[in-house]
Length: 119
Image 1: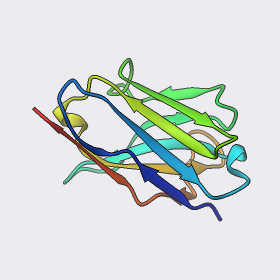
Image 2: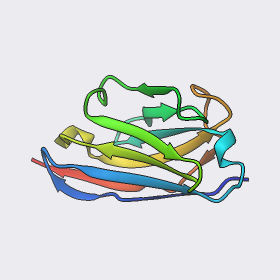
Image 3: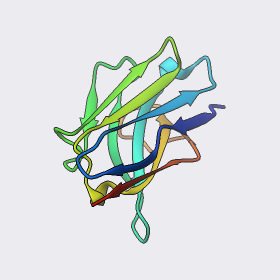
């Protein structure tokens, strides 16, 4: 069982930055691929970025490329999402998820952290 707790969301103006964190409870954190997902009102949950267990491989959705950076610190059981040049369309509830492999549906989810970008 892996418990995930996101933090770092908030209200920011367009063009601003936020850094999301996702802290995991499990000692096996380093064996999971991790991903950030988001869900806006009335829309389906979508992937934003993911990272392999080692951090050696990453994936970004087109909407995130060039603006967001995913990283992880296995010693701290934490994965991060640095978000720069934020746009109003980035407004959503952001979740982290833990998967056996990149691209797989997460086995575990956090409760989400709200990101609101004002224009």
